[in-house]
Length: 341
Image (tube, rainbow, N blue to C red; front, top):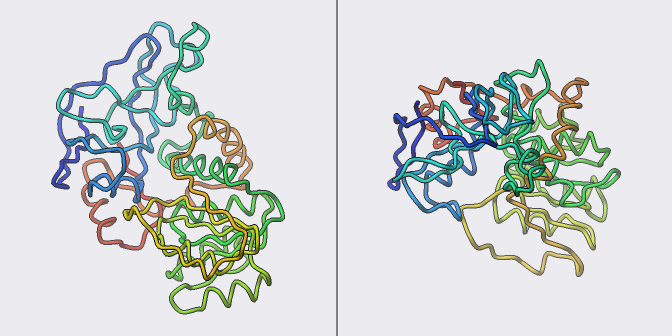
């Protein structure tokens, strides 16, 4: 089979690999799609992702695939199931796994079967969930982002009738806007420097959009929400957004950081902040909480209030994956990009 491999010098290429091995509690999955995570994937390529330092490494973590073979003790999957988050951990010697989902085959693990037999499954296995019949295997790659965002919102404590400002409107930021609306939060304010993304934020439910390049963020937010907002959320990983948030939150409010920055330090201007406030980072969502969010996301899609296609701008065949990453490197206008196998 073929996999997408990243080398220590930042070069990337498709290489031939042996098929993944799977044990009696695992199932072999033929990949259908994998979403590009601009933040995580690019940081791994640039050797700036904390915790991944062994190269060459096999990239990809937003995968969707179909079960094609079952281990002897698998009970939760059947051949033909469309599943999320297959990973490849037992990679060939000389390689490491950055989850390995840009590969033609991967593996899922039956956590429930292991637990029933008195064994302990790793947390990732609990999030390798089956999608309902009829879900599209390409656009379903976006569901992984949806689950991460919804579970992260719960960790941050988002509730109905609370105000929020979302800074940065990539697929993640727009997902936060959409879910804030579905959860009954408000007012919802969305900030970016690209007008097309601001227009998308309006469609997702933002009550006010602000162009951070041409408008005064502090003045606009405080005019719309006198006294400040309950939450200011960095959805893309810009350390300066922490200071922006300090200017627009109300006392005892929270600045939430979900986006991962390449910079490992940030200077906070204490003069801008109220006396009481909280800064909370959540950049690696709990896989068990993602699993808990799975049903809600699927129900919203089935009921027509959430459409993954609204968040996807490009689909590339696996053979053209380098072209897709060239767009990411150039910072071309885009939403979620998906690789199709």
